[in-house]
Length: 248
Picture 1 (cartoon, rainbow, N blue to C red):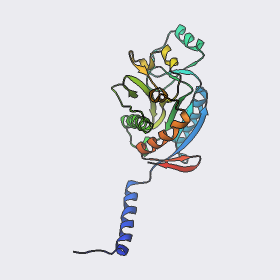
Picture 2: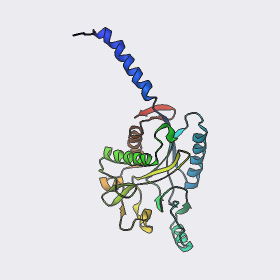
Picture 3: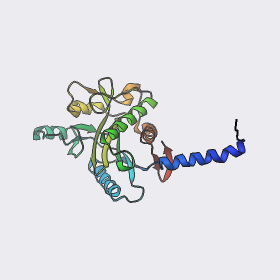
Picture 4: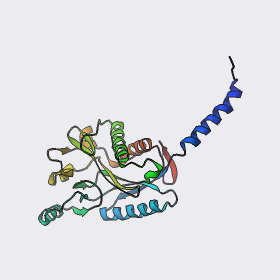
């Protein structure tokens, strides 16, 4: 039987690995942008700037925007108009109300909720909206699991713990560029959801990581878990503050 010595085999092995890497292509680079607590309208403005950058293909054009919002109710494109009295009622609670161009119906965003806006060109990943939504769901599920919470998908969009939604998902995709994304309840004040029918789903509830773990789990604690899960599910390299922080 023909055998190679270690010294003879090593360069062949290295060549094989390099060939495989060239065949697979480099992992997409995604810039992590931490916006902190930002009013919803301002967050949309920042997102729009990154969408235009992505569409123009400028530089490292993929981005993952992370933020929290002051209390705000948002509606999606399936929204058929709410009575002015209802909108006024929501505003009197101390929250803003905004119509958006994402999918879905009404939901709530507020402090203690991690909002993630991936601005990706799916041409560098997979040109499938169904695949993209599934990857977002799996990102949230993996992040929850790493924190000790068992979550899953359901016939309805989003990520659930039993009949309670822990992560809402509403996206837009135009010219293969994604916007909006997911909202993971960390230590959100869940009473805000009691003033609406979240995502139009009667008889369903909401929960948070803190509620499930019976301890306070902040957005800051959840972020590294979400980033690792995102990198793994999207097979990308995350650039956090200009450094290659995480790889899939």
